[in-house]
Image (cartoon, rainbow, N blue to C red; front, side, top):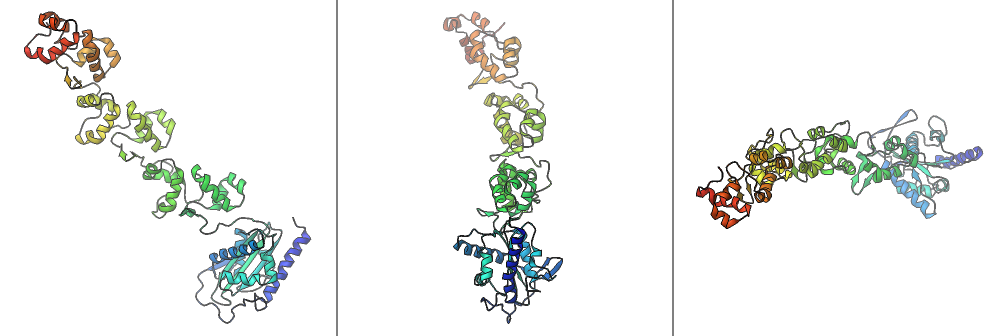
Length: 491
């Protein structure tokens, strides 16, 4: 830290350098004389308010950044570290450029030193001013050809700078100020600096907001807006951090099911979508605290005929506990697991009812429950098929692998006759039939009141001679020939 005497000496030196400029505003002594004879005409487009006064003039921030680039090029030639555009010094420099449109001096219009306009927190500072130079290159060239101004520009103690450029319709037409400081108080983000890979993030990021509302970022980077932006790009978006008052990624996600369907939980893509398209489309990006229009489409398939987000979550506490308000993951669970498990996800579709109602579907799909859901989605709903309220099996299947066993088998008879069968297969007519075909006939179990294998075997000697003790063949003979021949299958 400089001593008070050195600080005063530094300030006085800056004033001496500036005083030369104030008497000859980058004039003939140093080249690039102010254009006194040809003031810039045209209307003033704006105003600058500074120090409680308003000055007519238009600020050219683009010119200011170009001056910074040129200044840093000169510093680089001498091996001196570049200056950072400081937001507070920038405001000071713009104000000073406005002030010198009425009083071209390092003494302000109110009679105080130019340094009274500087922000607090600096220990060494300086100022260059100029008027009349039409381009950033010409004003930097003028300053570099003036020993005092050159010393300010190449002073290695300076780390920060504010540059003001104000255009007016009278006087010298264009006024410049450079205000230097020995430390960066608050880095200023360059226009266009928020563009990465063709995306302008200014719609979703404001450095001041990000630093103010994320204490850990503020602690890590202080007032460095560039580093704050890098953190936002690398971590903030993935973490869903809010970086501007006008965009809240959770609100944006809650509001639009089309985006949730497309992006899922990849939060970065929501920021990028709003930056690219959402803002232009006037999409709502704040204030939406609850999920709207839960997604029903996954990988191009619409499950709305058999699925409702709220119904599914309310019916199954494990689903709600696992996925909360995440409609995309909830739908993914239903598609990948829920349908296989036969979970109900809609008031208008119950897979067990649908299965109970239609023997043609049970015959085709067996116990592949997912196929019942997809059949209803693709065909059943359009066909007007019933999908709720059927608690018992209707039209139990009697066909298996193309063979109709109805002559020797009845689902209800078989289940009611054998408790072990009912206990093992419950309401499953497909598995019950499979058991009868694969085991029941071999065991000689009776599958229908009108056919008793033992009676059939004892009744016909020709069959006993042909089949012996191969019980299954008696059933098959009756199915294929016996019934047609009028043979008796039971008493």
